[in-house]
Image (cartoon, rainbow, N blue to C red; front, top):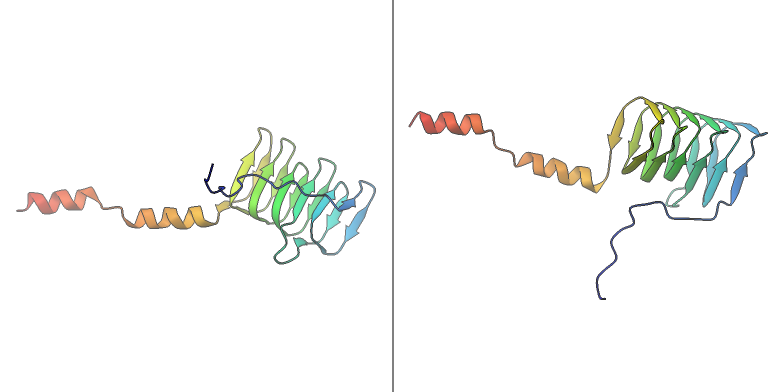
Length: 148
């Protein structure tokens, strides 16, 4: 009853306030806030405004050639360039990413393809690095004990 709410582990449903239709091609960078659905093509970077919890939805008809930096993303189309997602990334079955991906949380469906490196970021990674620092090599301890 009085428990605090845990941080969300999924995408916040927001209003998709902007649409790039399948018959539209944009050459240049796109900066948005709120939600952006891309059914067309973008040749340029796609970035949500600083501090905005923007949601990018890239449909199976859509494609982006450039760097993508957003808060949340649902990808079912093609991205040729690096993808950085601050919170939650969902790669659906038809997603194709050619570039490095940096994410905090990832959900990937069977059929999605990635050509590049995956790098997890955020608090969980920092906690894992601290835990790794506490590891003691048993071989060194056993050798020291055996020489006594």
